[in-house]
Length: 256
Image 1 (tube, rainbow, N blue to C red):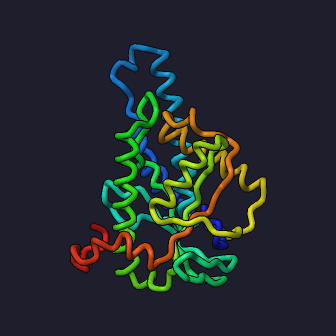
Image 2: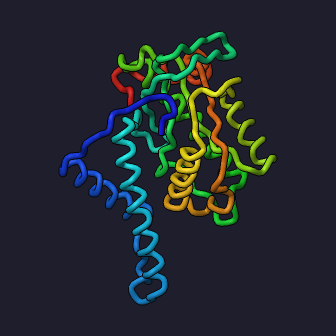
Image 3: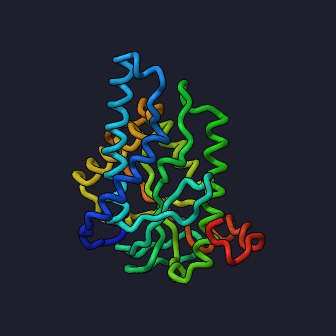
């Protein structure tokens, strides 16, 4: 959910609710198929059905939140791990490259595309998983450059913002911050939006639910109480670091 914008409450029509339920059913079959042996093993079947019920609930909630906050896909590429939403800043922010983002300016808010994130191996993340994730993030930001440069609605966007969950363990927290900075994001010197403790707890519970549904192997590394850190990337830095596709992809193919 965006920390930067105020959005009117969305009233869903029966058709929209039916569409969300239909989309959720398709994704459940993709992410949690019912094994053939489940029919003869009562315990296995019960476990799988519980997982599918949890996934259905979380997936439907995710769909409602995306409708409410205007979160949408900007590329249909299988390696794209982000969705985006347009938002507005609540406070002025200065970035390292000299970009000043005033109050009320348009920015791009990044949201993880849960179904496209690489799943944790059973024994935990390894070097192969880290390399895959790093490659997907880079390609996703390259695709974002195409979207921002070729969609007129995004011409006024001055910066990209993401919200990172910071683990309680100091070493894991440092690794998370170094990873963000390696991708060009910076940590602002001041809070970019008002955040209450109740809202933080609600967001952490929601994120825990997403991890439980889409990437259960990561639960052991997921603390329920985590701080949230805003990460910023100016438009000029984004284009300088990730604009390599702009000269290679025809302008008629913004979702390549």
